[in-house]
Length: 211
Image 1: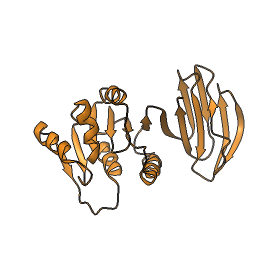
Image 2: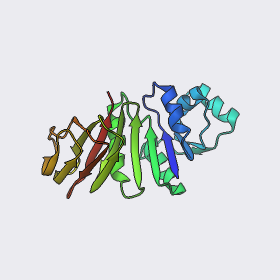
Image 3: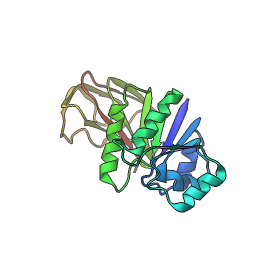
Image 4: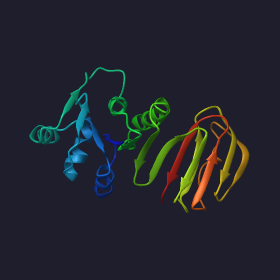
């Protein structure tokens, strides 16, 4: 099962958004992100959050379409995106894709990225996407198919990433190490249809980017 969560970050390409949400088995909307779904006239299975960032027009749309609502108190210890992921897990999905989690609010952007670490053991696949990037957590090995000529970066979260092996990359590596703060893992490129990353110890962000 695939669950897509739309959050209240920056989404400018509504054609891209519509394509992404149409593939969802379950579609959740976090608070003010209702405006994005209203603009493409796609109804989520549920909208949830503290409803502090939703505009009046979106609220009227929700009530008119009788979309399910889950309300949480405004004074809470977690973000609406965090709430949405936790709620999504009740469906026991194999995959969760988060859209609108990146944008001009760097506090929310960074917080959302680190939710990948928080929930890394809760779901088989957890990905943050926008039209230019696909961000996931890497721990252990990862096979990458059909991404030839795509930019790929590895950014350590743990103090070190050890035993890094890259196959099918422009700059291959055998048993390498990245220290947190290193920039040398940024802007490699996949050059084969089937590529592989293996990390023996540590966790990091794995980012595919399209120019």
